[in-house]
Length: 562
Image (cartoon, rainbow, N blue to C red; front, side):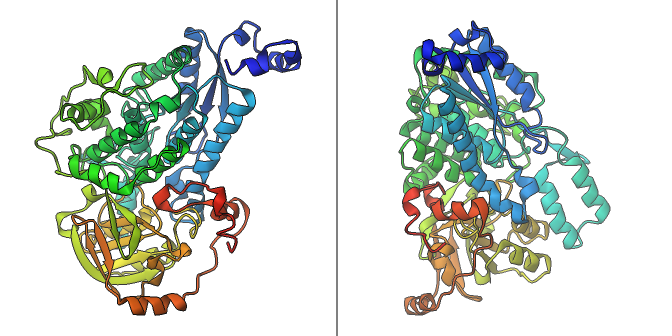
């Protein structure tokens, strides 16, 4: 076992003395040391119950003869960080989470890991660490929040963001906005729709890195506690059977996850995070292959923000397992792959079934014939852009409009809230990419404002930044190369014609190449919005969105002007 490096032999007497000082009994040190990464804190609703889950994991580890060793890591709430300078730090925190788990695991020679996590950047960060370390690992999330209610209507956090837009447009009064505020988030868990947090919890299940039920069992359910205990039990079995994360996170597993992603209609951020996790295993997610999977995989669920159903409805209907069984039976999944249960994908799905066809449609009668996400290319996005096409109305699938250009999210929100954006506009928000942001801010405020004002079917929005999983409408993010790297989005000017064709997977800037070349010769980049501390270092190392916005030391010389 890895832990022998710190526990066995006379020269490790000082090490054992320190373990004793921490209260470990000698008998505990004869068992596998299971590192338990716990991201609990008092500010993130998805994390406030994680201490209870961690105790359940510890119980499971002890049941099966292991010794649990808990440690902590950071967690940022995207909702609270939204639409101010705090959002610059959100995506960048993913790398800190991954690095902190790696540091603790390698320094203390844990034999395996259980990752107790939830929410937008913490879950993918922990999964990146598991992929990087290639030791036995299981992820257990804190689970989704229940939906709130406004009268008889289900609501969630995105309802409040859209409520702000409706209030600014005079469609609701302050009393109704306050009611939305008070009722949208009724308790602990990751926000109730198929936003980024729940998308990634479902992806962990689809990849085989989490136990069945991880993506959908509600945060408040006893079943979530029992799942945590089972994760503790199973991690010791993985050590005994010598199954590591690398044997689970194969290229084929990522293709399975992408198929499930398309069927569920997940957040656009899943492509950013799955690409980064694959990068840790030295696998490359080809964006053209993503489109192939999207073309061949029907969307079986229409969950918030695209529809009225929430994660609790998906769970009641059969969960991720039922969706995967539909895909497996249609030969759209690889059933032979290993998972953390010790069984194959097909074995895990043997008894899964759909119990509510209103929530999970069949492959033969899907919500949409294509998957929920699409990657589009063109002279405005040579390396691609991502759209949640399952949350775009038929009216906006093909759209042409004049560019309204903003060099920051803040200036765009000011224009939208001030009524300066009209039907037929294409809002362009640039210098918000991984490097230019820095930190690739998630933009729920502008998209929600447009939706709340009733413009989501008349206005498109494109950015080299990214969108919340709660975003709906013709919102295209991850435009690569980003403006700060000299991408074509930096050359767009007010009034330019932009043509979007989602079925054709294209986005074109209708400006003559000679004119674009002249604009490029005169281009002056704005000064970095934040040029100190961690984000200054991050901007020097971060790669583009199409490669997962991962840290790449080879970019230091290339970006020495940062």
